[in-house]
Length: 386
Image 1 (cartoon, rainbow, N blue to C red):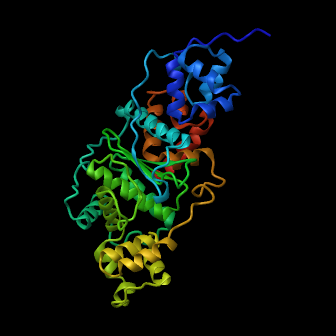
Image 2 (image 1 turned 90 degrees about the vertical axis):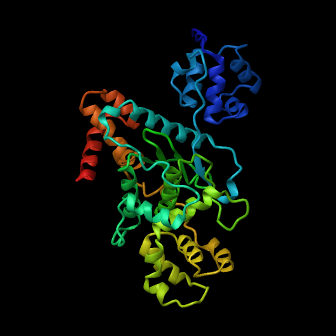
Image 3 (image 1 turned 45 degrees about the vertical axis):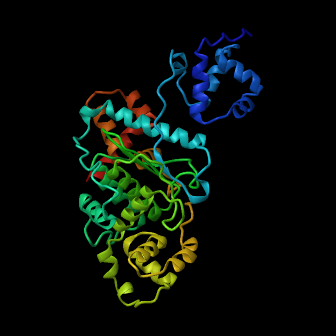
C-alpha cells in the first residue's frame, strides 16, 4: 500500500487548534496512539504528519482542513462572561464548553454576513443601566422593556414561561442560544455584549425555572454592557463581585417584582415570622415560575426573612439537572435545531436561503443539519410565527 503523502501544513496552526479546542498534549497523543514527544515535534515542524493522520486530527479538533494552511494564527476568540456553580469557579474551561462558545461565535458571524436579510435593530437598550442605580427600579424597567404584564406568566407552564422570556429578549435583536453537552457545574449561562447581535446562552441541562433566572441575569449584563466573568455566588458570600450582586438583584426584581410579591395572599397572611415553610415557598415560586431559592432571596431583600434563615435553607432549595438534557428526549433534528438555536437565528438563515442569498449547502452548514430536514424546519418556524 502506498504511503500517505505528508501534510505540508503550518505547524503553528496545529498547536493553535489543539489549544483552542481545550486539549493538552497528553490527551491528543493518547487519542492518536503517539508519544507526546512526537506530537510536540509535529507542532513545532520538526516532523510532518501524514495527510491521512492530519485529517483525522483536524476532524478531532472540529476544524476544516483549510484552516491549517493559514499563514498566521487567527485573533483569539473572545471568551464571554459565564455563570458557574460556586464550587467550580476556578476549574479550566472544558473542551466541550470551548466548542460551544466557538459555535455561538460562528453563528453570530454567519448572521452578520446576512444582515440584509435580518430585521432591523438598534440595540439601544445596551449600556442603559449603571451599578449606581437601584436594582429594583432596573428590574421594573427591564419588565417594561420586554413588555411583561403584571399577571405574567398566568397559565403558562415552566417551559412556556422560559420560552416567552426568550422570545421577548430575541425580539430586541439578541440571540438566545441553548448550550448542549456542557456540564451544569461548569456553566449555567454566558453572554457576549457586542453589536450587531449580542448573544446570551443558557445551559439546556438546567431546569426551566433556574434557566429563567440565568437568562435575565445575563440580560442584565447586556444592560450594563458588561463582559466581566459572571460567577454564580450568593449575595451573602464574601468576595462576591459587585456586578454579580447587581445582576442577581435585577434578575430577581424582574422575575418577582416587589409590589406583586408583597400583594400575594401567602405573604400578606404570613405575618412577621422570619421562617417560611417549603409549602409557602412552593406556592410563591409557582405564582412567578421561579425557584424557591429566588423567592427566598426576594423575601430576604424585602426584609421578610433573616440572613440566618436564608443561609440555612437555600442549600435544599435548588433544582436538580434535567436527566433528559432539557426535555429533548425523542425530539427530531429540526426540533432540536430550532430549540437550541432559537427562532430569530433560524429565521434569518431561512430568509437568506429563500431569497437565494445562500445555497442549501450553506444553510445546512449554518444550521448544523442535513439539507433534507430544512423543509420541516421551515414549517416549525412558520408555526412559531402564527
